[in-house]
Image 1 (cartoon, rainbow, N blue to C red):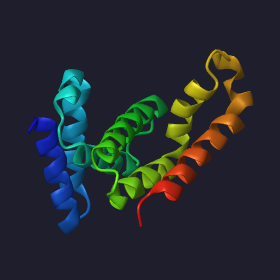
Image 2 (cartoon, rainbow, N blue to C red; image 1 turned 90 degrees about the horizontal axis):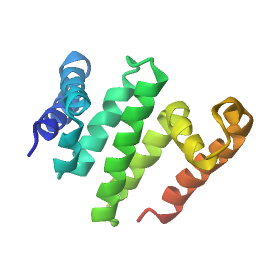
Image 3 (spheres, rainbow, N blue to C red; image 1 turned 90 degrees about the vertical axis):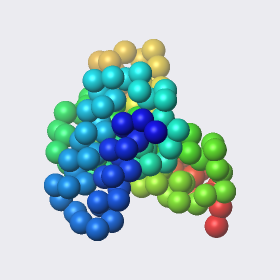
Image 4 (cartoon, helix red, strand yellow; image 1 turned 30 degrees about the horizontal axis):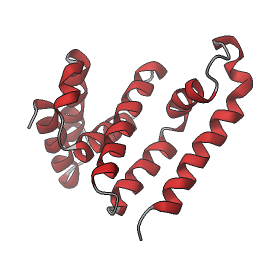
Amino acid sequence: MTQLEIYAQEGLRLFQIQDGDGPYHQFYLAWNEYRHNPAVLKDVTNYYVVGCALSMFVSYGTISDIDTRQSIVSVAYMFISMAIEQDPSNANYYKARVVLMHEQREAFEYTVSSVVNKGVGIIFMNFHALDARDALLKMIYHDLATAPT
């Protein structure tokens, strides 16, 4: 288990028994671990734990920089998606991904927009915001429609 996973797991454990600084500090350490050493991401094996921890970390609202939030949300989405790929029968994985997309819509729309509006140019991206919003809603609908019950 990587140090990133250890921090993430401890943060989620603490979050079950308390809210506030204890879990937040562990989530922060997890984020710092991959921020200063991105190569650690390739060694993660517990995708769901890391994805959820990063999702919880960004939900505290202490990160105001949209680029940083976008980065954290994208990594969390990637790991939750990898967990779904490993076990598509776990409805909690789909729920976590839908919650992440819904709660972090603004940050996530930037990522979606960069894919949906590829080649549009940064100046005109705002004119295509509805395309990104529609794509995001389709992604959420897909998860809701395909998640096991």
